Every structure is written in structure tokens, then in C-alpha cells.
Amino acid sequence: MKRVFIIHGWGGSPETDFLIWLRKELEKKGFLAETPKMPDTETPVIEKWVQTLAEAVGRIDENTYFIGHSIGCQAIMRYLQNARKKAGGALFVAGWFNLENLEQSEIKTAEPWIKNIIDFKKLKKNIGRLTVLISDNDPFDCLDKNTKIFKEKLNANVIVKHNAGHFNDSKYDLILKEFLKIAR
Image 1 (cartoon, rainbow, N blue to C red):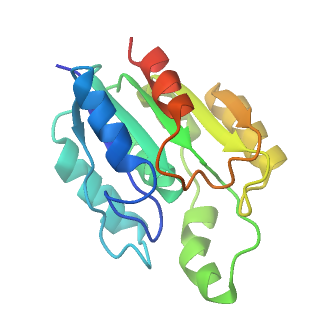
Image 2: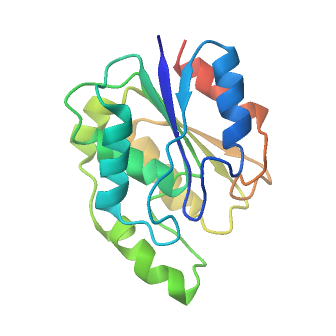
Image 3: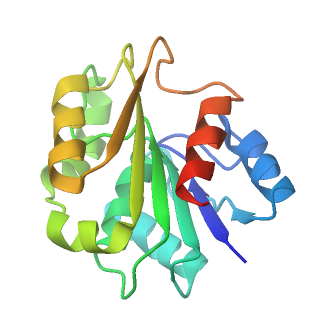
């Protein structure tokens, strides 16, 4: 059975944004879909998020898939760079390496995620197929910089959606459609 782990963003939970809708849709299509609650969601810490994800996933294989939202994408990348086996693939929604327009109070939390380097060589070996959905009006995203890194370092299929902001709505058919292409 194909498993998919849907990882929420900073300040989010398994019940926010599109996660509930997406989990139900994937279950209808025969996936075992899990949305683990990440710790300290208002002040996410790399090590805690990666450990929580590792515990949720257990054994990884080519039937293991990931969907991340915002900082959830970062947690997935940091988990997969050290995975022992290759995953089936991942879909990143509002994924990033750099951020803009943060509040002063958010900079301290974001800094380790931005400055601690990801091992792209290991990640590329373990991630499987990767698609990234980015919006042209995301208030936090450095569209050109992030697109360039995803394409050059990870050979990602990057799709720029018009006016989707930070993908905080409750339903996006595009997310389901693009994930199903990865997990076919």
C-alpha cells in the first residue's frame, strides 16, 4: 500500500489549510494518508520536526510519499537527506529555501531553517520524483531564488500558480492532481 505523509506548515496543524481535504481525497484513492502533528508549531525547531517525522514514517521505501506545506517541505527535505532508502516522491506546496517579509519575531525562528545547509546530493538521491507548487504572489516567497534552487539543485518540476498566496485555503485541486502524477 502506498503511504503519504502530509506535513503542515509553521503555525499550522493537521487540521489547517488544505490538509483535511487532501487527506480524505487521498484515502478515497487508496492511500494510507497520515498528517502527523509537528511539535512547537509556533517556534519550529529542525531537530524536533525531523525526529517527529522519522518516528511517524518508520520504515521508508519506494511506496512512501510526502506532501509538505511551507516549513513542512523543509522538514521533509532534512529528513530525506539522511534517509536510508529512496522515497517514491514528494510534492512541496509553498516550498522555500529563502523567505521575505517576516515579522521581527519570526526571523529568529526562521534563521536556522534558512542558514543550515541541506545536503542536496544526498537529498536528490533519496527524494524520488519532486514537484514544487509556488505562487506568484506568496507574501513570504523569494520566487526567483527558490525556483532556481529547486530546479538546479533537485531537478524539481516547479509549477508557478497565479494568485494562490501561501496556499492557505481549504482545497486546491491542483495539489491533488500533481501529487497523483508523482505517485502513479
